[in-house]
Image (cartoon, rainbow, N blue to C red; front, side, top):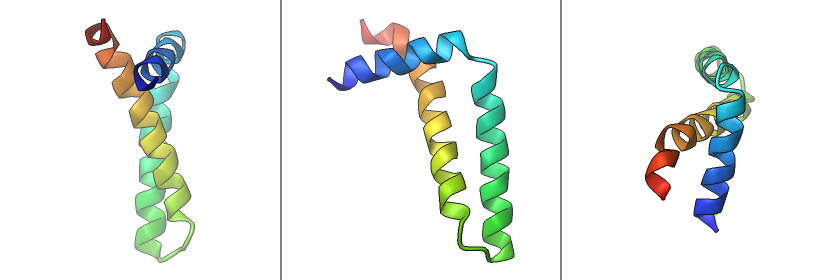
Length: 66
């Protein structure tokens, strides 16, 4: 079941590879700046960065799933 999810995320990554690094970096920077400023909503940005990183890693490691 998780391999199927990772294969789906890899397919999403293959079709939109240019979006994910930009989204990861921007949400990570947003989370760091909000946490340093003491705002409470930095967790949402960190979860978005984690999701983007998961899609990127699924796309990079998908050929090893077979």
